[in-house]
Length: 303
Image (cartoon, rainbow, N blue to C red):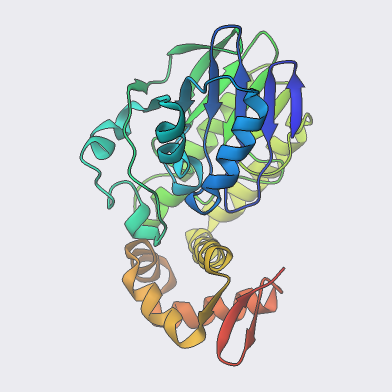
């Protein structure tokens, strides 16, 4: 756990779960993002330990990918926490449309949760007794938000900016614009007086200028040939599922890829191969990178 301030605690998680940021105010406590469902019991334990008997009053989600909201349901059940989500996702959550929420498209799991309020760019929040601005951060996800405390120069960047890069530009896989939006989000971050960044994954960092430089270089690389973003995406998606399951039959991967709409779309639009062919290529890439290994017909998580 990283303590940014007496009342701001960052739980740096593994890559299957997003980081969680616990904000302790005098009268309320807020958690920003809740990780993946596989780790929900660990998330609950971390939060309970840090609260020292207090109630978790509120959950704030930067966006609704499964690794950022998979702990919502268990925390709601335990604490009765009010939950605030990006306004553009309200209808999808209300009707629990798993296609539009991306869970079905990626083969990932998220228990159903409810929400009590919405967040829009331009909104202001009080967390840890500090004022936070809600900023739009499309690119990785069209609905994504960031949170910025000008008083302390703290930016919760979600997956718009990591110390080394950013998240997959998912809208591009479906033929929608995402590279331009990510570039605008990076420009927005550069315009802020952000001195500390809490990313969605990885360690808290302070060298914002260098992180932005690396991110822009990577964005130029991906946008210069969108197939690169698609190749990166299919590797990330398979690695995510492998982190969750730890092992799967190699012969099952082609059928898995053919069942995931986002991979089917990326295969057809950018890679010029069938999902089954893309599956075979992706397995080879993970093995070559020592992120997986094959034993007795099974693909095993590694690295």
